[in-house]
Image (cartoon, rainbow, N blue to C red; front, side):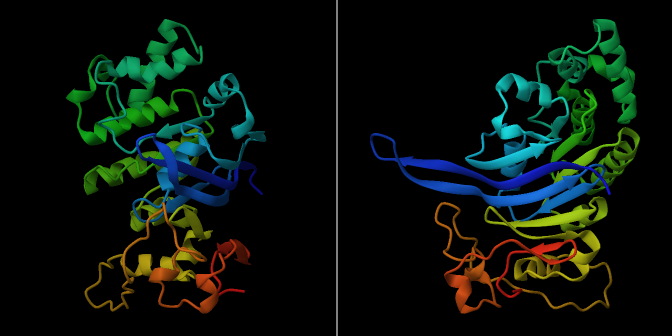
Length: 322
């Protein structure tokens, strides 16, 4: 049995809404609303859902790039939400992030060599000569050339910039990589190159990934287990084969029915959702999905379903499964 590396318990992140001439609090946006899951050493956990469902906020809150409102994040036996800023800085050596936008996540004023060596400098790793050597090694590991270290971000394509972002994240030999939609801004041909690179690096460096995306086919390709989020809540979590073959939650069924199948003779029943996604500042009572669900029953409107185990490694938050 693999070691438990990350345990997220009842994580919440609410953003205040302010209004009026005095800027008083008039409400709150429930970006992440009571999310729990675990990640084991050496696995890839994918998180999927529509835009605005709280995937990226979850990833940033785990790293405390955004401070959580409630809940706990246990990483390698330590509660990340309770440590001091200095201890958190040290912990970040083991927890790194690959950001969604390869254009915005690199400082345009710094050379590639400086960008990749910055984490080494922050954590006091190696001499200047050793850091320079490490930068060249990392560039070659991610499929670039050592001489690229003297260039600047604007001189690279989107795919190359994302490789630079991966090299920066790998510089301090982390245990956990949180990947926030790392291929969504790239062309399809480049996406496959980056995904293959990430799979190779996982095996080479014994990495664990939390892989956030909205492309279901990308998540199926790279993940071991998949969690589905809707309106700030986790609605289903299972092994990828089980989730894709036997989805339980009506929202997961609707998502999977929208995935195109490359077979002209394949006939599948498309699930069309009713209405629009409700506002996270005013979510529906009971089950957040009941306003768009064709399988809803009376209890769905009043009581929020608990996130419970249905099978061995299959969890779902739905009243249809007692």
